Image 1 (cartoon, helix red, strand yellow):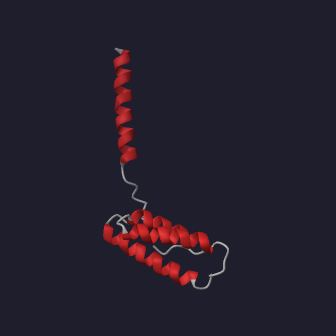
Image 2 (cartoon, helix red, strand yellow):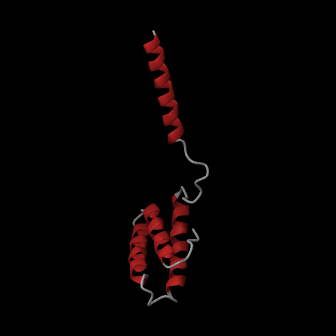
Image 3 (cartoon, rainbow, N blue to C red):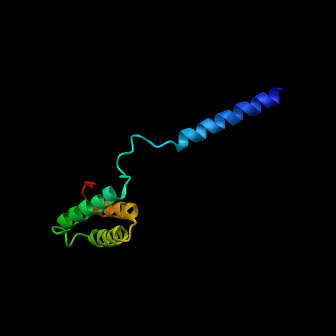
Length: 101
């Protein structure tokens, strides 16, 4: 009888804990959820990158940022906006700025 009680308690606790882990984090507001928001983030980050890179053409990290920018634009254009936003954010951070989107 004790073993059944313990097994039942373990099963209940594990089902509750997996539901808690699967729940969305309400504090995670940095990642837009729908496609229009992601495309807006892509275009905002592209504009920010273009504004920053103009003054840093000969900076040592510009080549790496340019590669990430190209990958991000390509991903945004091919309906992989979430990956595109991540790559564009990294490119902007490499150039020393904080991403706007």
